Length: 312
Ligand SMILES: C[S@@+](CC[C@H](N)C(=O)[O-])C[C@H]1O[C@@H](n2cnc3c(N)ncnc32)[C@H](O)[C@@H]1O
Image (cartoon, rainbow, N blue to C red):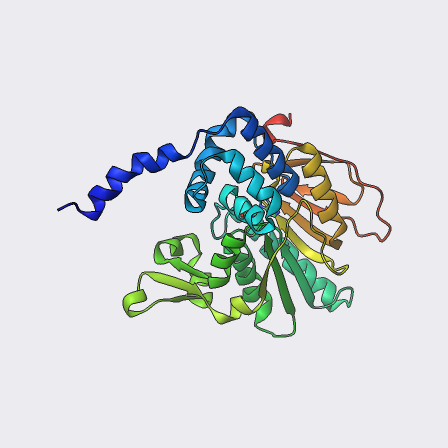
């Protein structure tokens, strides 16, 4: 008798063969389409990576070539979104780049408290985690803000968490992780804001109601979408996504983010991304942390970006 495993092994090579290899011209078409849709710039060396990420989707759709898949994405908006799900890199961690969170605790929160006491600012905080992936980043921010400002209940905390990937956002909304990931969260936050599963779910943890209540998830494409109202944010996190864009897409994104930063607000970018800033509206306060100058009339910004390695 042939087992399921034997049948899978027997059929697998044929299934692989049904999909023709990604040609140079198909790669160029998909590369341009992905850039147009998302700003993600796939260098020529990423041909094998792209084929690898899309092959499973082609198989699920029973398509024989990447050209067929490209034509499908041209006529089907939902498939374009799925394609971006397939190709996006969603790697993230709780409290990734801990110096950003220390900066918020030690510098930003005391500034806010002092300004509120002098009635120079309101106690309404708005934060944008602009490429939030599966939610670890906005929930980490939520825990820090709740711990320092949540107890008195007179601060209102709203965190908008957005990403281009609907699949990542679904996971973020679930707020459920394997318990192994608990090691990423400092104990004081873990005990206060995360819940450990019981019984059959003892190997899971989920985000508690308090942190969940302050985070709102929405799909948002940094390359193409515009926020609905003229809302401004006290903090904007845009970490580990600009590195996937080319210089023009990066510059346009940073300019738009800067438009949305409140006077005195802070922009955080990833540690492998460093901005060379010639925007009068932003001051570099630490590598990868920028403060919006506290003035009303913004000047026209000019941006360029270098990798940290490129800065002498
Ligand atoms: C490597 S993860 C970074 C997650 C988190 N910010 C961090 O630093 O841990 C990059 C995220 O950027 C998202 N992304 C890529 N292009 C995007 C775009 N045009 N608009 C919004 N999000 C995008 C991806 O879906 C992915 O979840």
